[in-house]
Image (tube, one colour):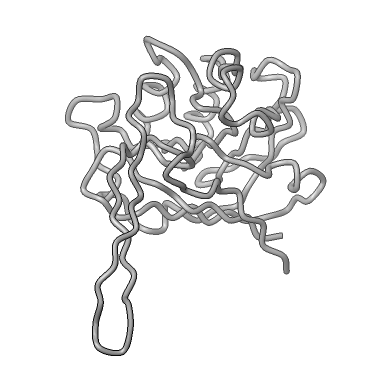
Length: 204
């Protein structure tokens, strides 16, 4: 068995979506008898780095991330190789995706994470692809881009409206090429919020 971490490291100077506030990850310390004790304080948007969106992010009265049963965050994984391609139905040919599965979309954009191009020219998921995910009943769709779409965020609404959670800013998806079958664990921090940082691990 081998585990592959698909998560960007969270740092104080990590890149953020244009217009979002920069996270603050601050080291503090207390002096006690016997030595110094280190503490860190975190102030951040939930949509920084590798994170998971829940329905409340886009839908009034939608579920919060903490309202999902933990079983929703584990599943059989499928890698969709969309490098240089439109993310549409033809990419699903030969895939045997079932209810409860986790679909990860490789675009190759994680290699330019943090550059202007990463946020300006990422590919979007088509509405027909998103609707097929709903039809198949997958639990999660993840991508190595900052978003599956752009304003007015139709793809977010299609997926989240059917309890399909969205992971953005994945990395190292190339390591999964040719490795199916694999399983995915994607555990978000249990915040009472519309999204949360998530540690995503594939097991092959």
